[in-house]
Image 1 (cartoon, rainbow, N blue to C red):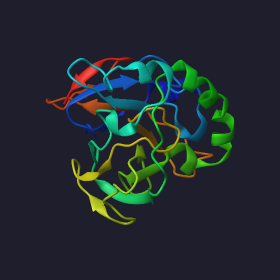
Image 2 (image 1 turned 135 degrees about the vertical axis):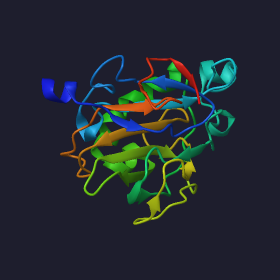
Image 3 (image 1 turned 180 degrees about the vertical axis):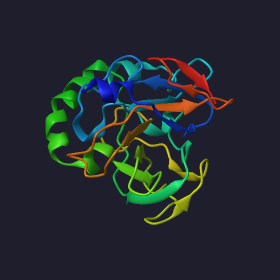
Image 4 (image 1 turned 135 degrees about the horizontal axis):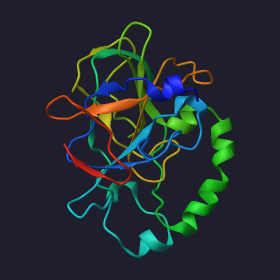
Length: 217
């Protein structure tokens, strides 16, 4: 990545979730945040709803040994809000919500299948998703891993910042319910470049949560 991209002013977004949110794969920790620039994920962040004890779901023997029902997680079904005003330019719904995997025993085979999922295309990776064009021809916000059947918007809809657009799920390349957020200069995904992002605090100042930091919105 060029130094120009690293120094670019972040695209300022509203928070797309409410409540207690833990940041994972934060670009505040490293860039590219998800380990690669592919599909415009350079500055992407994962937002995980958590409970008062900062758990995505209560711990049990299943969490240690096997898969878990996605419905048992705090984030499953949590409302997802538009982080900016704009026009909906892409919608995909209908992908299944997977079981969740926190156990290392279940994560190993999942990781081994990563390459084949990437080759299968954006819908398999992003799962159910919505893309909002913030202007006229970008930048574009991708909200991914949405709950099946929860998408409330259609192509061409104009949305305002804070409008409820879907619900958090566990579709696509996801091991537990969370919301993947990224901003790109294009929705031609094999050519898209990720753009730096930040979220507006109550005073409107840009905030980028650190890895595993919990934000209350």
